[in-house]
Length: 382
Image 1: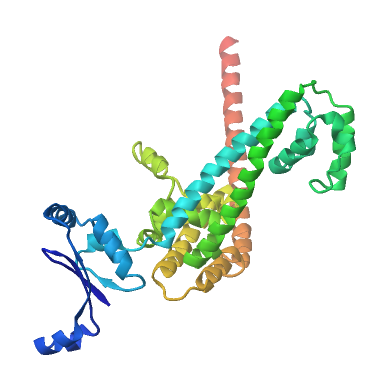
Image 2: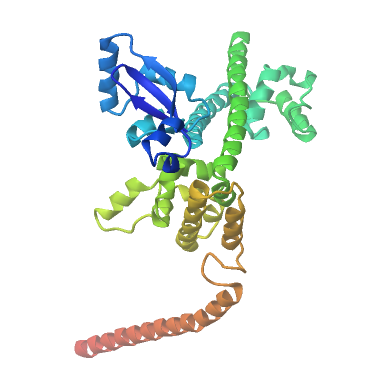
């Protein structure tokens, strides 16, 4: 282990072994600690600026270069926690936060470009939009085809299935689109050339994000997936910060604005935030979404803490919790097994029939009362 010392003349790095035993006496301490490297200030101005930055727990450029040159792969002891955070190596989860932000930006840009390709080329070949639904395949087909008149001569087998290719060629012969100039088609093809590299980089970035999430948060990824787990980490700031949050906070992460809007007039608060995009919640019935979100958030909170503070790098906790949440016959997320659900449905049917009978009786009484008032009116007239 290395120890950083600040001195009037410069910075010094000392190497030591077991301090608890060897520092019992001054003689033994001299044998253990030895000077490894020393960086001297060039002038008093540099010394003053370095000392000023250290007061604010910030390293100078000279100190950063000194540490990079001599502390590669070593453990450095620092008493100031703020200074330690300033010089320590960036965590992997910060890379994940940056990657998910870039992935969202690419999604927006890619969607804008592909919609522009559809609208632009749609004037020339409007039927193609219904035949080819996928945006990337649409851009590839437009780039290869250009003018719809040339569609019959081209081979789309590398891009589209045989049935879709035949339908495309048939529609191109009877299309109701307008004629466009060669210059317009060249610009449309250039736009398609911009879309395709974007899509390839998006796929590459997604694979990177998936591998990083399986490394840094395997249990959270196994439970909710990388496309839900990554925004949770990004919203929390880091995996360790997210691990400090209770399950109730994880449940509504991403819905803070809606929460405070509901608290002011004392309305119902939101039941889920970013977790809504998890497949279990998005596919559930509306009446069960709140219960599922609460259970999934508690399991996700356990998975996050295990990923952040646990020693293992496996995803066993995430897989076990996933089975408990997704399997209705085991520990059901709704708190009931299948047999209990059947009993509850049987118990609910008599109450429903009783309510319907009560409603019928009320209608009869109101009808009889109305008939009585009509008779009284007729008697008074007579």
